[in-house]
Image (cartoon, rainbow, N blue to C red; front, top):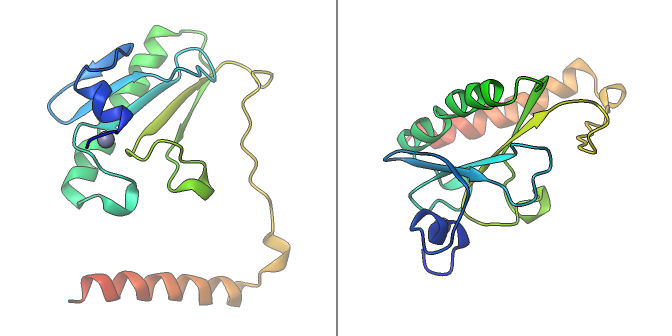
Length: 146
Ligand SMILES: [Zn+2]
């Protein structure tokens, strides 16, 4: 896609520190290096976000995650954990609108990388959760019942 920075990186019109490439995906270092080795995995085909993936394309792209994860572990023996993050749409911190998966190696709890899951479990009964689950399940059935 024209004016997409990741499409330009994939086309090698913009330089990047490439770590992996095959017919479906391209992986390169995130310039921010939230932690050392912070890598982005992207589909070569322009896909805005998770909502746009065909199932086959998603399986091709997301299936590459363990390969990159194991490579990071091998390259950084002091890596003690790995966060895999995929942000979708602006509210959810997506800043480049070409789908990308962050692989963020973790070395210690003091590495200035934070994810906070607020715990609101005290606000939901089992019946509330069932009602929410039914709503989502119905939406899935609607999509696939055509
Ligand atoms: Zn793109």
